[in-house]
Image (cartoon, rainbow, N blue to C red):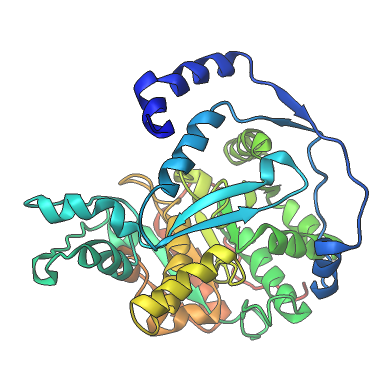
Length: 414
């Protein structure tokens, strides 16, 4: 009997799972000397000059409680007879970060039988924009007739006047907000962002959640703002929190953030630095005073050098059409953005403002990838004073009791 069939028939994995949950071992990690040769030496030689602080590794690590089921799942995928599968091996110094993964480049294979045999198929979800790639790579790739594919999108539960989305292309001093890879580490860009943040914290009540493209860039920004006294300046108005890299610290940060927002004494809430695609951008709700403003800094494109992304884009370019790989790359970015901005509005009485900080958001190609409910109220502002005034007016209209400041003068000394 094949190994995978035996595992399913005997329910061995389920029995072992229950046992190991009670007796899960802990792996003690021994620190390794800092080697400069081999792969690490090569990576060091090509690394950029911008220093990024890294957190020390955990000294202990919980082993997987269901290793057999994971192995059986991998073996089952390896038996699939298709050319769209790839094996991805990532080697790390720690046990828990080393990965062997099966990557299916054509996910439509998994649902072809359902779509081809069923009379009708309903795919329902929340944040599904942009939908173009989903429609093409899921339904049409399975042989569905494009003429039979119907799309229905409900309006949002809130009216347009309860959301204020703004694309901000320039900062308080008139410098362009360009967070592309070549410009995002420049002092001019970081300082201009600091000015924007100080102003927004002065006028937005309660909680502000600020999303960055990566943990590394969040750290770069925070270290610079902290070094130059901007974090201290903001802390006079709002208590500042940061999303932890390790899952174990999330609950503590969220608890502290919520407490600071709801029990602000002499201050005006809190500011939470988070990461797009991180632990706080999906599944967690920042409703009501926890998220009166969501800021997205730059466009969170995935790592173009990722082996998985390289294989996926290569497959799409070779097997679908020219440009399909780039479309996938852009869709990954905007799906992450849409997930992040959707954290703020969670019920019909909620209201919030969303700030997209990057001049690239003003292009029509990018705007077409935003949800329809955002586009109904979206404003593109090239002048920072007008954007600030619009935010002040928005919160005055909602007559919030969360102590929004009425100051409209913008700060430019950061």
